[in-house]
Image (cartoon, rainbow, N blue to C red; front, side, top):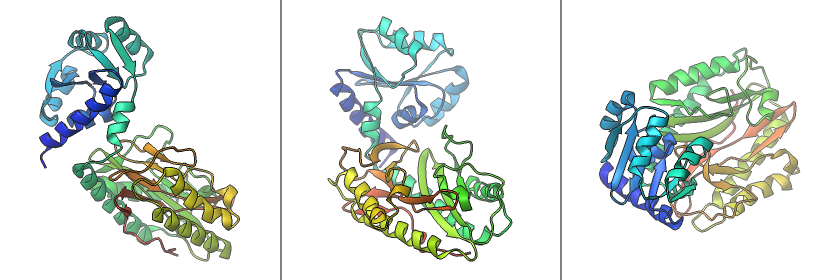
Length: 359
């Protein structure tokens, strides 16, 4: 299926959700939404209505916007207030929904337009269900992550620091066109957490060196051709404790039960419950301290949330993670995570083993 027809379908879907809010025009400021709408990722504003798609871009982005976008009209404008003025001229009389929550931008647009709604709902609602091109990209990105886990089995060693392993893995990834996501809540592209650092689900990578008996949590979250692939494996180094082996098997069983619960029309809450039930039954419930998963796509965390608080039901071709974990403070942590596509059942995108590998 060509880019043109894929984007036409996306745009129709975006406008359908836009219309539900009583609007007839979508305006995207966020690069993820601009890319989803046009296939161009950059500093620009995207405008979508029933007549077509327009990209308002500064001169330094115009050339690339023309080359990379699909079936889009490119309008050159200066940055800042000038771009807003150009946008307002293009939106005369429209009922507009925008993904911007910038106070000055929203205030300026409200003064100029009859209807303005600041909402990301049309974008996130459309992006929940992946099309055939998105699934193909996610599969390829996940394959590269599997190769990185295989690399871990050959490169992890005593005396090596978390930072050193991150350098090896990121070099491998970037040679294969996988890059950091730029996720704002972390300073590092990966989570590599040995020993007691593994008890922190979002541990920062440090100079700590791996030692005999460590459990090592490797969480790979990287972007390939715009889309985020996300998977975690926990490795063991040398003579690990019986408790660590026991906890690993509990998390493995928990994840297996969570994957079994994934199917169209099942509630996201039921997937979370399936994972949590196993860990609670084994007496480690209070150490499973995060939700079971989340949607993936153009961002690290998208809809739906796989949580006990979620009211969403799964639909075919959603892309989600299932990632239970147990975190024992000042001792170690274990997490096992797959990204998957919802089909008639869960179709994990990762083939790398979930058996405990002792290095």
